[in-house]
Length: 123
Image (cartoon, rainbow, N blue to C red; front, top):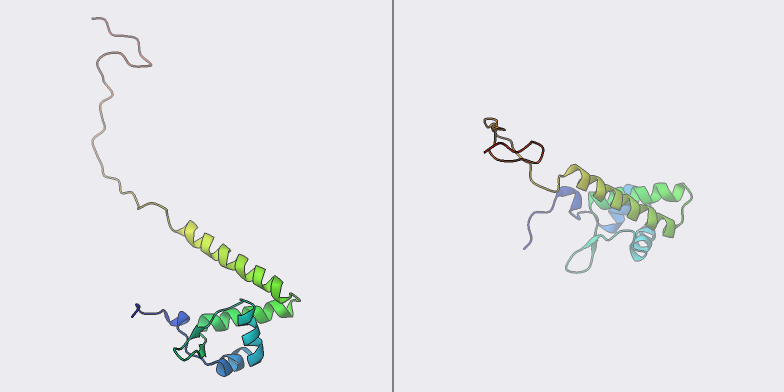
């Protein structure tokens, strides 16, 4: 068994309920899945289960259709939006662990011998 699934990712709605919630036909949801625009969870018996995130994506698909995009264009837009979100998240997370500073006494700059920027000391 896998770990807990975040609420937005958990498939709880059947296809007819999901279609009603987003104001689309059941056949549209099947078409969008066939075109790769979304991938709802499936039960062991193969029944689709739509999550809150799936419903949000379906609403976005509806908005893009209303704006005049075709399904191929919608696929590109959704892919780019996903990539944009991933890059923004990467920007917010530093690629290395946070560095903590500790206070130390300043190091003495007095050295013996020759340094690059000073003349040699007489022996």
